[in-house]
Length: 288
Image (cartoon, rainbow, N blue to C red; front, side):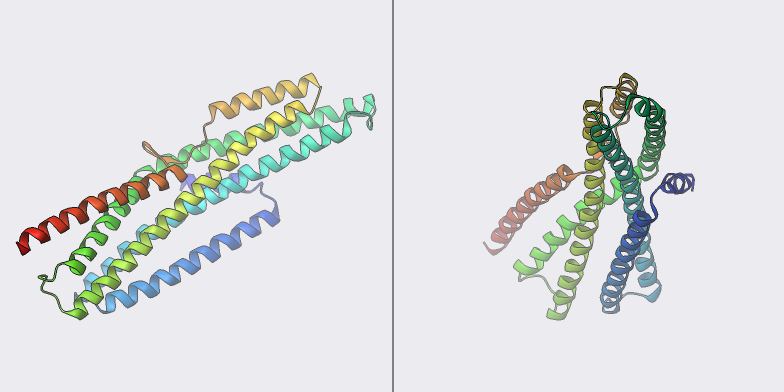
């Protein structure tokens, strides 16, 4: 709750248009995927021969984990929008310094506007520091959950595909065609669910990281766009603050970005190839 309160406080400074667009994106994403997941789960569990209580419990657990993942993703998207607002304000500040300082403004007018520019930079630094603290709190709160989600997704994809190939290759498996078809549907739903979830989480974290890196570039551009010593000093302090605030979306020892997705794909492929080779070897031994 403290995390959500902090996110609410830092997001209050977002422009109304950005807040409205972000709200539409979050509600559309959550509604669409919740409806899709509901249809898949109901269609799947209606054909499974288990007790009604176990069906309800399984659907509840799946939706609980899914909503926690969506909550983390929504928090990352809100923080990304906050970083984007800081970057846009810095770009506007750079345009003012670039277009206004050389000859269009008199010395008296520049002296009057410099305090306002310095106040704006100070406000942006405080805002960035508050957002960075929220990022650290977000990492601390969701760290264990994200590690569990990634490990479970990794294991589910590998072993679901492995047992899929077991049913596909081994003719000695005693199962009717309807049972095999049901398991194929079950496997397809599970694999698709975990792939979409991991890809969305990685996409949100990767775009958020890129937005923080863009702020560093914009700060250096602002520093190079002015000759005022006070503004240069404030931008140097802002640059040092950016170096100390490593806004990386991570979970324990795992950094969530495109490298993680590439690593997961490579590891899943490797382990799956090993399991399939083991399956063929065991099948050959049984036939011999």
